[in-house]
Image (cartoon, rainbow, N blue to C red; front, side, top):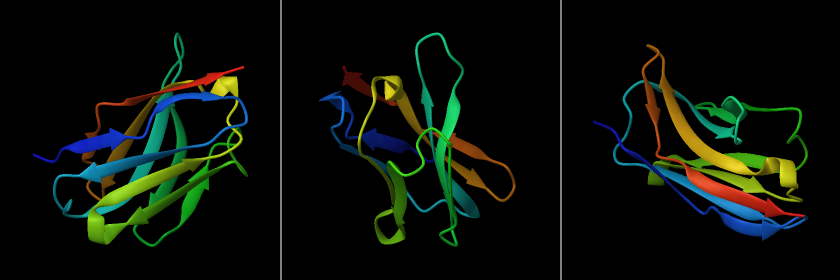
Length: 116
């Protein structure tokens, strides 16, 4: 069983930065994409950023230009650099890995709180 462990969340003032990390316990066979989702209180979980094994990236419109997703396959780790954070970025951030066969793995989540 693959475990995804997130870290790097916390409390930050608006305009500040955080860097989230998500490390997989082992190489995920057939992995296609590594993603970051977030869920704000009372809202549905939404895709924030995605990166494929080929390095193609995709971002939610609300974070474009502020967030950067990257991956270090040697460390089985994906990162989310978040700059110019806004209060509306507050939520629990989850990392996710999807294989070509559609198998999904989820981390336990890390809280990000942006104070105004």
